[in-house]
Length: 83
View 1 (cartoon, rainbow, N blue to C red):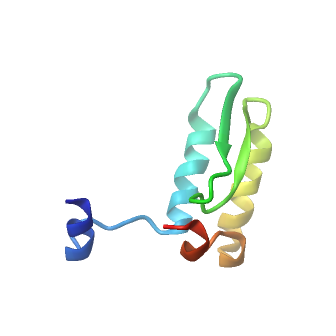
View 2: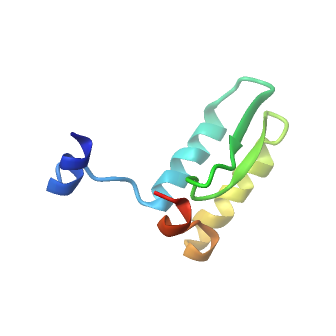
């Protein structure tokens, strides 16, 4: 069903940078301590892992670096994501 909605234009997928903006928002708003985030799967646009709150600033900085540059060389292409 979702595939048909995407094909028809009724549902629009996020672009890689919008996806990273959501990831950043998660890092900024999750207040649980010692939560392990593992974003190393091939499907992730930006491989990033760490433990909130300990690695929070580092994780946000990594995402910010890519968002500020908007340089697609920093993100995995769809081909490399295996989708």
